[in-house]
Image (cartoon, rainbow, N blue to C red):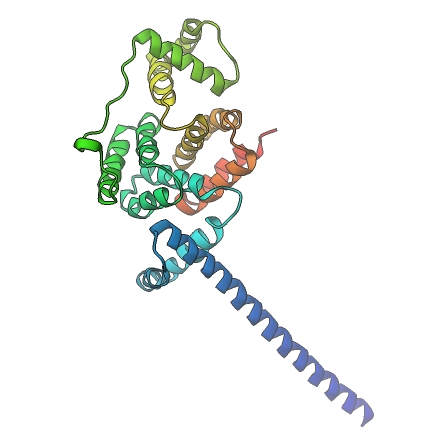
Length: 291
């Protein structure tokens, strides 16, 4: 009889403990969820500039179900809320990825978000300009058209209805500017850019000259974005296009332009949310290979 009583007491004790642990786990899960959701709504609020984004968040979830939940809780609540990258820089990266992937409809969230997070209208337009050299003019022009429409609606249309054209440079000036950019990118200053062109011609033909004169001499050398911003932009383009071989050139270049390894890791985490895990994993391998 004594043993049976002890056994029954032991079973009762286990039930009590299991119940308490179950309540604690449920409470922890609820707390974690509520914390992620609160962070996500806060980011949505800063993106849209609303005083309260609760209703918008509820509509996003109601219209998209679990996908909407994940967009709020993971993309905004987890990724966007990480401290390793400023919201300005993350917004620049996301604008770049969306334009590169030709997801212009999503720009309606992130162009206003860029302004709210510290990018200027000039910088946002410059993102689209730089993309032309790395993702092609069709994508860049489509993204610029949608960007201009959104900016105009927000009161940032061009003065007198016209944007300023590019500066005009002689071929010698383009070459000189391009050589300077390439020297910083590569970490190997060249005293004679023509010799560099000749060496590249063996591998790339006329593409080498145009790369230096246009991509470097005109686009990269523009003052509307810093070299650090341009490196973040180019690494973002190459990541979402899966151009891993080129990443081996531009990831170290980003470090030389002042981007940290931790910031590049954050860029890849952002790519996970906006371009998918496989591309982000490939990019992260390149970043982790840095010395």
